[in-house]
Image (cartoon, rainbow, N blue to C red; front, side, top):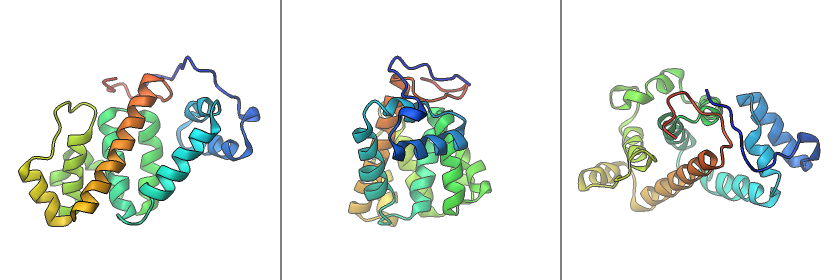
Length: 185
């Protein structure tokens, strides 16, 4: 695994605002690395926006089941090779009720223990990954998605993944996360 070496300065845990010290502890406990939180200490308001506005108001809104959004988040992290994300997202997935068997089956999800709804969301995730430059919703994929989701849910699921993929790109460009050996970035 490749350890992060960002150019932006790291703010030590002792110099972080109190709410970010808790985030530092959580990141360090889950992944063994808190670089993302330390660099985020340079702009706590943006970090809080990410946690409060994206995660609390969109990702965990309960409009889509938590297990579903956790599955697609973990699928994206697995494909991207973000070790930091894989560690943290696996823990969150298990806490949400996703089984270890499902986590172990993500690479071959079409043959894994997933509902048709989950499989269609994972198919969409494969279109959204950074490594799929020409990803799109084909007529066949839309028909599959529309069997299990209404258009508003498809839109929301895509927006969640768009933010996750954008943040993945951000963390790779800024070198804020530990990467798996197979990470293409």
